[in-house]
Length: 470
Ligand SMILES: *[C@@H]1O[C@H](CO)[C@@H](O)[C@H](O)[C@H]1NC(C)=O
Ligand SMILES: *[C@@H]1O[C@H](CO)[C@@H](O)[C@H](O)[C@H]1NC(C)=O
Ligand SMILES: *[C@@H]1O[C@H](CO)[C@@H](O)[C@H](O)[C@H]1NC(C)=O
Ligand SMILES: *[C@@H]1O[C@H](CO)[C@@H](O)[C@H](O)[C@H]1NC(C)=O
Ligand SMILES: *[C@@H]1O[C@H](CO)[C@@H](O)[C@H](O)[C@H]1NC(C)=O
Ligand SMILES: *[C@@H]1O[C@H](CO)[C@@H](O)[C@H](O)[C@H]1NC(C)=O
Ligand SMILES: [Fe+2]
Image (cartoon, rainbow, N blue to C red; front, side, top):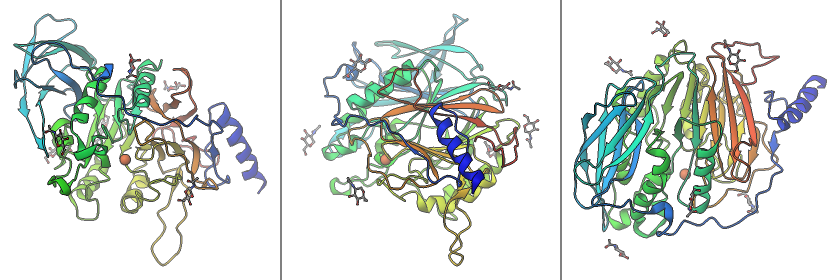
C-alpha cells in the first residue's frame, strides 16, 4: 500500500495550497475543514430593510431580473413587476454603440395564492441580440422608467473563456446579503449566476406569505437585473399547500421566473438546457418525476447525446438535491435520482454537477457507484475518472441556518467539506482548463477556501495513474 499512502499525503498537503490531486478511492476520506464558523442565528432581514425598498415613482418596475432566452445566448428574457397597474409590456433596448432604441413586446400575468394577489408580472424576450455586446434596457414605458444593462455572452465555441458564479439556497437573511456582496465584489467577476434552487424561502412564513417572494425579487435585483441568473427549481419552489387550498406545485415560482425550456425541446420549465460560451448547461428537477418513461427521463436520454464537446467542451449539470452528500441533512434524498441517471453522467463524462439543498459546502472526488444490480452487492462509490465532480453549494445563507452535523468518519468520496456560508466561481479558461474556487463569507473577497483546476477529459485525455486532477 506504499504508493497509495504516498499519494494520500500529497493530496492533503496540496489541498492546503489549493491544488488537489485527485486520488479518489485511495485515501481514507478527504478533508473536513478545520475552519469553524461562529454559530449565530440566521435571521431574515426585516420587511423595512434597505434591500427591500420599493423603487420610487408611480408604477415603478421592481424585482427586475434577466435570464437567457434561447438555446445559444442571442436572446434574453427580461422580467419585472408593477403594482399600481399593469403598465407597459414593452422593453426598450439598444446596444452600447447605437443610439437607436428598439422595442420588444412582452406579456403580463398575475396569480393568487391563498389570500395573496401578485402584482403584474411581466416577461419579455428580446431576440436577435448580437454576441459579446453590452446592451442597455428600459422598463416602465409611459410611467416611471428604469434603466439597466447586460452584456451578451460570446458566440458559442470551444475556446471561449467564460466565468460562472454559483449560488444556492440563498433566501433573504442578513447572511444572504453577505453572500451576494461577496459574489458581487469577487475580483474574478462572475458573468452569469448558475443558481441551484431554493430562492426566497417564502414558504417558511405563515400561508407561504408571498410578500416574501416580492422582497426576494427586490433584494436580488442588484445582481439579477444586470446578469442572467440560470434557474433551478428547489423544494422551496414547490409551494404545495393543500391545507390552504394551494395544490398546484411551483405556482409562485413558475409565474415569476421564466426559463427558455422550449428552446431545448423540453416540455416543462423544470428541466432544460442552454449553451453559453464554451459550456453546455443541463438543468434538472429533483422534484419532478424522473423515473423511466417520464418526460424528464425521456428528455435527458435524448439530450445527452446532443452535447457536442468539440463545440461546448464543458458539460455542467445543475440540480437541487445532491447525490453525494456526507452531511446528516437530507442524507440520501438524492439517491433515487442518482440510481436513474448516474450511469449516463459517467458515460457522457459530465464535468461537474452542482447541487444545493444541504446548507453547507462539499466537494467530492471523481467517483461513481453504478455497478450495483441488487444481486451483486457492489454498492460503494469507487474512483472513476469518467465521473463528474459533485459540488454541494447550498450555502447561500437562508434563514434555516447551517448544516453542521456531518457523518463520521468522512466518506472516501468526500474530498472537502465545510459548514460555512459562501459562493463559488467556475472560471473557464479555454477548452482544456477551468479554475474553480469556493469563497466563504468570513474571508476577504479574493480569498478561496477551496479550489481546484479542472482538466477537460475530452480535450485533455490522461491516463489514470497520473490522473487528471479533475
Ligand atoms: C391573509 O391571512 C392572514 C391570516 O390568515 C392574515 O394575517 C393576513 O393579513 C392576510 N393577508 C391579506 C393580504 O389579506
Ligand atoms: C445589504 O448589503 C448592502 C451592500 O453591502 C448594504 O448596503 C445593505 O445595507 C445591507 N442590508 C442589510 C439589511 O444588511
Ligand atoms: C428541437 O427539436 C427540433 C425538431 O425536432 C430540432 O430541429 C431542434 O434541433 C431541436 N433543438 C434542440 C436544442 O435539441
Ligand atoms: C461538433 O462541433 C464542431 C465544432 O463546432 C463541428 O465542426 C461539428 O460538425 C459538430 N459535430 C456534429 C456532429 O454536429
Ligand atoms: C448528528 O446526526 C446524527 C444522525 O442523524 C444524530 O444521531 C446525532 O445526534 C446528531 N448530532 C448532533 C450533535 O446533532
Ligand atoms: C488553457 O489555459 C491554461 C490555463 O490558463 C493555459 O495554461 C493553457 O496554456 C491554455 N491552453 C491554450 C491552448 O491556450
Ligand atoms: Fe432545499
